[in-house]
Every structure is written in C-alpha cells, then in structure tokens.
Image 1 (tube, rainbow, N blue to C red):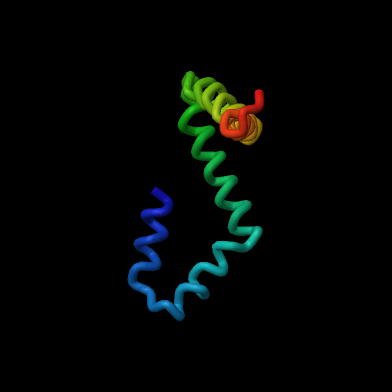
Image 2: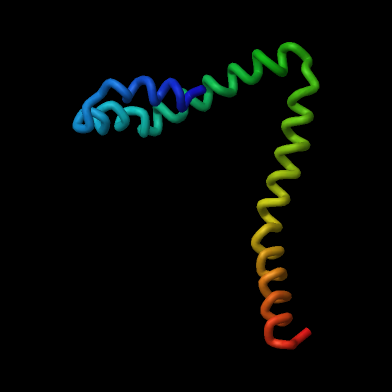
Length: 90
C-alpha cells in the first residue's frame, strides 16, 4: 500500500524533481516517525483488540528468519554434494 502511494506521488513529477521529493523521506527523523506510526497502528489494530494475530506473526516470522539464516549453509551443503557427485567423491 505504501509503495502504491509513493508511486502515485512521484508519477506526476519530472525526473529532476524526484530527488527533491525523495530526499526528505530518507532522513532519520522521517524514518523514526514512520516506524513509530506503524507501531502505533499495529498496537491499535492487534494489541488493543486482543487479537491472536501477533502470535501468528511471531511464529511465522521466526520460521522465515530461521530458514533464511540456515539457507546459506544448506546451499553450501548441496553445492558440495553436487561437486562430489560430479568428481566421484563422497
């Protein structure tokens, strides 16, 4: 949703105007305010309503994180197996 809003904002701008439009969005203060606003919205939507969704978010987020952490090691393992298969090793 945010990407769509951002796209609609810059769609009508000329190329020379885009950096002046984007630069304030990259400031530390803007990022802090955006994160705080997102956390406030999350709190209002899920925590205040006693929803079970935050538990799902933690569980699925943990699964995705652990998969991404283990992925490089798994890729190395599979590459080693493939290399051994090609060269007759074990």
